[in-house]
Length: 233
Image (cartoon, rainbow, N blue to C red; front, side, top):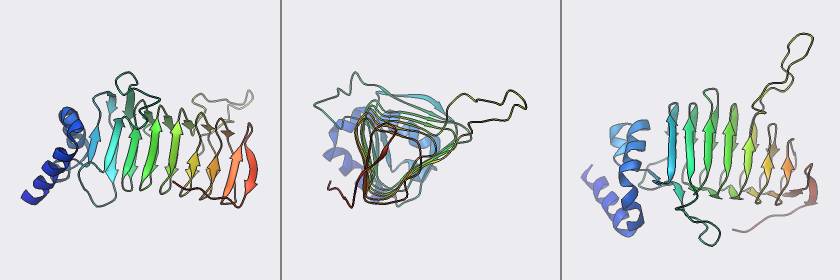
């Protein structure tokens, strides 16, 4: 235990900007993790991220180390100011981290009681993204989100048949494969499935399954515009 505390102190010395956010981070960790895990502070959360509702659960399915998950901090200095772009967490369901994750400033996360949101290892979300999870949204390993992206696995409001009240627009999961890069201002809607090593172009509107990996997807409605690609970063 003493060794783990020493590692935490070393981390804070090397990352002094997180010191001001220590009380909120400790509160968040203690809310969701057991005491021993929480004191290692695997999750650092910015004071500029509003904690609207901390119900539900948060799980980390990986070896713990201090600061492995960062929420609400500046990741794009040129475009965004951490002080004026506030994020929010409203969690009534389950949020799962499979490893390291960086969720940039201004990101808003809502998880309904029926929802499960899964971040794969080495997830990176730049800034000002919005995630609304009513059923399931899953990111694979090393997924990169640019900024201003909306992901929704729900239409929020139900549309029903006028004759028998059957729900015509049920929620559908979103699955993003390993090493997918999603460009800025994209909209990822329910039923979307993207295979590994793919790129979604800026401003795309995606709402269906794409079966092939290594493709570039763009447009509204989204379609494959190039195959056999990969990306570096």
